[in-house]
Length: 515
Image (tube, rainbow, N blue to C red; front, side, top):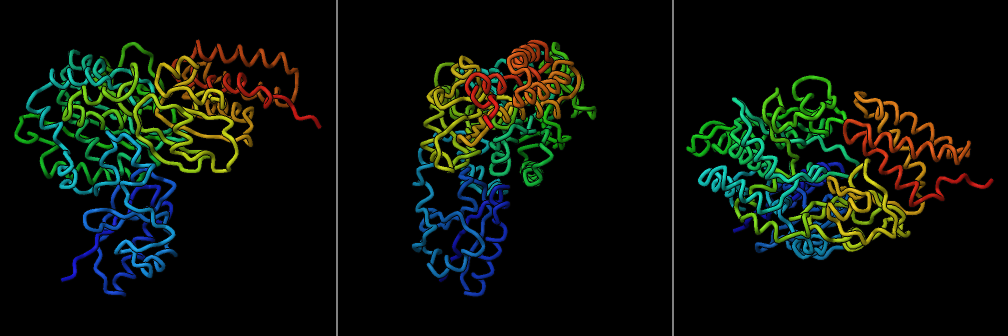
């Protein structure tokens, strides 16, 4: 009796953009023609973006990977008998043995790529909702103790201790409290939130529900980046499925606890990644920064106490409750506990997501996982933490990736985005881009950010054109200090970081070419 062969083809954005849908259709078409029974499962991504579309064949309980596959490769794969693991130039071997994946320390992303994101059965089979079950049994104080033990800090960039934030909202008085998930992932070179929402959406739902139970909130909102339509579709389906199985909604698992989640599509503004601007947008207003205090934990959404965390933070919580905070804090170094999903992009051979414990160096990450530059040239500069992060030269690549070590070098780990440049990059142009980006994305509420960024572009242009060079260099440094000291939020306050680092480490790029 013939049994159907399982074929896994990711349905995440990266795979689809590289032809994943066409590959799936072609495999099904040829399988029908050759009367071979196959079951195509649209799983999530393992995060090996440079191999997408990556397809896997399940053979005797193991998965054999091939990639990257194009539609035109499918006929050759059938001729090579890939359904039985046949040899082919694109064969990668057992998925679990691929070094890029094998050498990671997966916690938050352990199910990504493994499961069908639409299957609640797959999720539960891999200890999904185990953390919520414990949380429902043991209650708020137990959750807060385990969070404190874990040392989990906000993965959205600020690195604020999660336990302190949740404790503050728990203690706050209010007839209504909210959980707001910041899924407006706008930093350049970042995609961990997207991969998680598209590959393991129920982990986010479970994490938000635990947060609601902890602080006494019965309503949650996911503020989703408008450029993520596939994530929206998958999340909406997961919310519906969770409700149907009573892991969300009224009287969850007969516990007496109610929790609902709505998705709110963002307005396309970068500044709405800042928590107070996001809350303004959620309320239907223009996404502009609020003055602090009051903190959102005390007066957040609609003036009520609100937990604001990003996707990876919330999705890390279920396994912390399931396995214990000490199991999580065993990873990492110093005050940077646990793991972070670093995202490699730019001029790098093997771009993708790497979940690894804090403490690894930038050089290890780029060389061991990234495979060095795609161009084969030496690494010239690396920007970590998005468009507001400092540019690190080759001499700083041995800096350990932890919050304090980076802060000591005037850098930031941020959301974990790592963008690599070789020596063809002009860092004066990159510095100009930072100022221009700020001028475009500023909410306009404060003068240092709104006007300072425009003046910054003008000053850098004068430096590049060798107009009163020394005077304008001094002016640019003064302008940067004014923006750092006077801006209301990180948009204006951190835009000078890439500018100042470019001036410090790449001064030659600011000198006019000799013609």
